[in-house]
Structure formats: structure tokens, C-alpha cells
Amino acid sequence: MQRFLNQLVPFILLGVAIVIFIFGITLLVYIAMIGAMVGFILYLVSLIREKFFPAKTVAKPKENKPGRIIDSDDWKEL
Image 1 (tube, rainbow, N blue to C red):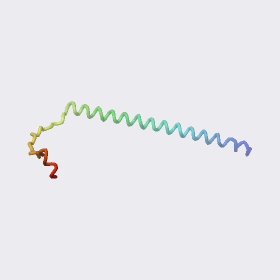
Image 2: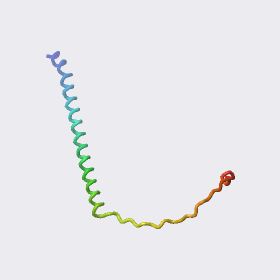
Image 3: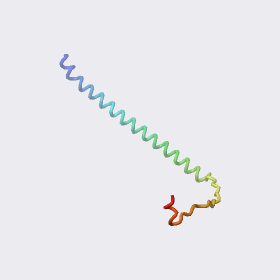
Image 4: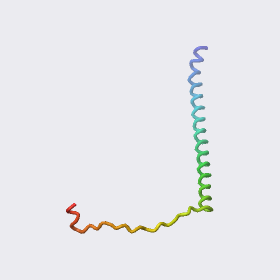
């Protein structure tokens, strides 16, 4: 009986490991699917929000800042 149990234990452990592995893969797939659904819903909400309530942007007048003009020989003095 002891010999039979010693031969059976590795198969039981292998079966448990396979079940845990399959359960883990299934759990990861479900998490990925839920994440994809949540992302798609958020995308649709933002798309609808942008369609019906566009962002109001105020065009700022472009400021004319005086630039620095470097002549061809000025850079040698720097």
C-alpha cells in the first residue's frame, strides 16, 4: 500500500498543478476581457462626450516676440 501511494503522489501533484495552471490562465483571460470591455466603454463615453460637448478652445493671438538675429560673424565672439 505504501508503494502504491508513493507512486500515486506525483500524479496527484501533477494533476493539481495542471488544474491550478488552467485556472490561472482562465482568470487572466477573464481579467483581460473585463479590462477590454471597460476600456471600450470609456472610449465610447469619451467619443460621445466629444461629439455632443466639444471642448471650447479660445484662440490666443500669437505674440510677436522679438527674436535674436545672429549675423554670420557674431557666433565666433560667443
